[in-house]
Image (cartoon, rainbow, N blue to C red; front, side):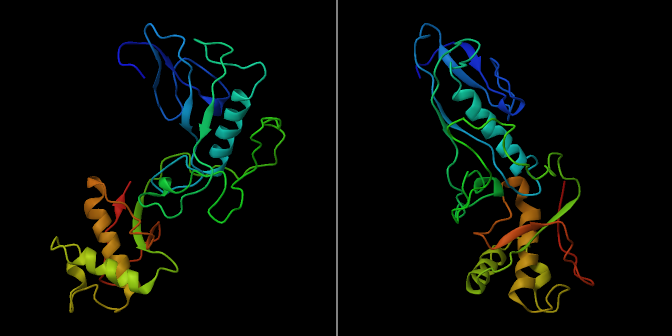
Length: 244
């Protein structure tokens, strides 16, 4: 897009089944066209809604994802085209993010759960990309249970099925940074026993995440960890936690 002043701002609040000049959704604003270039065609190159995420990522659920994408398709496949308030009846191509979940992507849960289809090939929810199925014609969706921000403590523990050799490597990486993360795991200290990769890994992950979350750390550790609302502390061993 050419640089310069923007004469209009476009946004589509399709979850509420509305289209307006400015976007609420995820509070994402996008310039529609610069002054003097009103004939440039618009294209929405990436839009969508995540169907799952971590406890500290409210609104990431199947209900919201299906509602958003179904209404999105209804709007942009309408005949005649809806367009925007500034460009009524304009045909606007869109690209939904994304077709497949990216289950090998690192980072928080929101990075891996945008797909219309899961990583094993199963549809995440019913959706008709042709727009011929009305939004009221689909079957019921699971209730949205995380639309409000989670309030409480979270721990970062070893995920079920974590590879043992990769887990031991991750523990060494986390604990050999000389930042005090694993002081309680030293022999004779309060969290040394029981001696197991799962126990030591859960403490190391929780401690590291609690210490460095504000600096961008997340509870993933290459798929070896997951967030938990259950306190894994035992006896005199108190696991660090993140408080929301």
